[in-house]
Amino acid sequence: MNPFYKRTAPGTDRIIGTVREKERSPLIAAFLSLFFTGLGQWYCGEPLRAVVLFLLRFLPIVFIPFIPFADRGNHALFVAVAMGLASIVIWFAAPVDAFFLARRRSVPPGGTNSLPAYVLFALISAAAIAAAAAMAAAMYRPHIQGNDSMEPLIRKGDILLVSRFMRDLPSPGSVVVYRDDRGTPTARVMAGVKDRVAHSGSMIAVNGDFLLMGIYSDIEVKRLRLENSEQLFYEVNNARKYPVRAASGSGRLAKYRGPSAPAGEGRIFVADDNRLQREWLSSIPTAALTGRVEGILWGGSWRRALVRPFLEVQ
Image 1 (tube, one colour):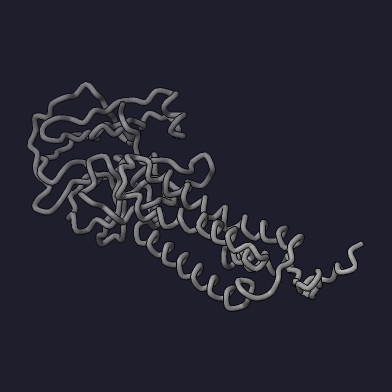
Image 2 (cartoon, one colour):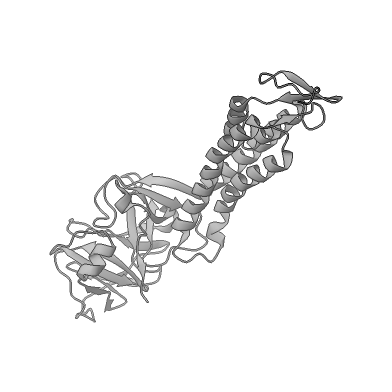
């Protein structure tokens, strides 16, 4: 046995040759990394490992605000959730790694293994994570659906992911959140600012042409996690296909012969997916828009989680 080596309790000193080292407490290391990702690794004498773990948690969060600027098509829901989950996984993995690292590690005092170094790393990591989280919250927010106006796809109580940033007016087929005297309802955009819109029964005509409406196949209904019924139809708008609840629907009607009207200056037409209600088509001012719905984060079960508000028509 080496006469210069003596194992002691955590937190006490031991001498190897002429170098005094200090053992690390696994619990302290784990708690440090829980509150400041990477700090437990730094406490164990692994500053490079600490920085890598911090970046693995920080970078996914800081990427989220830039998703709207990317050509993400209809996949912002999945990208944002994936980035958030990646950061959370690192957040909880870091304390576990620090715990086991401390059980087999002792470090010499001074230099990077000092209280000022620990405090500086903690302050920088906390400030960076807080700033990244604030940027992500400025771009995306959760929204709870307050009524059944968007059934059958979006139901009352569903938690939606809403993008606050909109470079342009949402295109037809998109689901939006807006402000009015009822609060912040959701609805689907039916047409552009200059388009003329009318409706006959449960069908909508844009510039004199009825939007295609039809019946889902059993396979499509199962894929959308819906329940088939006599009131379930699909509608296609701007190459986007989504379910509607209606009294009747037929894709055979092509032309609308009645009068139609524009939404008005600075306004757009929006409609509810649930068309069994008395008033489901209306115009709203574009200034009232507060965000675009990217999809359902949670619909009450794993079966109805991460559902997009429409499907792209191939």
